[in-house]
Amino acid sequence: MTQKDNWGWRARIGIFIVGNEAVPEAEWWAMAPPGVSIHAARVTATSPWAKWKADKSGVELSEDMQRGTRQFSTMRLTAVTLAHTTSSVVGGKGWDEATAAAMSAGLGKGVFATTNGYDTIAALKASGIKRPFLVLPPWFADPALKAAVAYYAEHGLATAGHLRYDPGPGWRDIPPGELYANFMGFEQQIEPLYAQVRAACPADADGVLLGGTGFRCVGIIDALERDLARPVVSANQASLWHCLRRSGVKEPVTGYGRLLTI
Image (cartoon, rainbow, N blue to C red):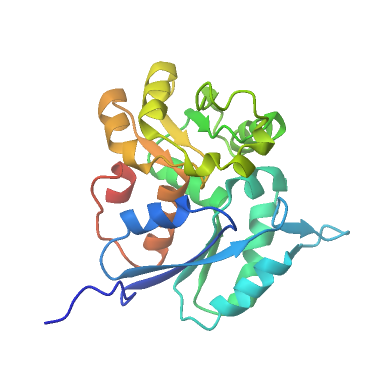
């Protein structure tokens, strides 16, 4: 008798994630269907994780990205995503395309390369969402929040409103940029997040986007969809869905939103 060993015999997906985060891997493994394996490379570079060349002819991947791409190229992966919302939204116009191209060059033929920005845009369109209510984690400072709103508007997805999640009184005196250093990422609670999203979602929003791959939230997607009667997309859910479909895995996954059944 054999036991489950999480071997990626249907698809093997690589994800670049923030070096000190645990949420992306946990959420991806929770949602991944049988026969799909997830493999993470950790990045400690500042945002964005690829910098524009002086002549804007392309981007230079950070050292961690270059190393991870070389390693991923030997692992027979079907897809790789740069799972970092902030890099996409602050990278500027054309950054996703240039970065995906740079990743593809290092990964070799047959591997689908993408970014979280690409993934969420594809997911919103597949879900029929045109005016999302954008919900971001508390560590998104004002410049990153404004960049995120502008990013989706630039791609034809003007937000119906936005919310930066309030993690509670114990965290309010800590600046957004210092929350992770104080381990806020490991103290996230999804029940208060559910309550805030449900209370704040505008009537004219046709869906919800929970941005940020380090934002713990996939456990409440189904509940929000039922109670708001609208589709809900999260950063990690979107990237998994996009990579699965581009890897040829079309099996519906239940329990984590409508998107994974499309």
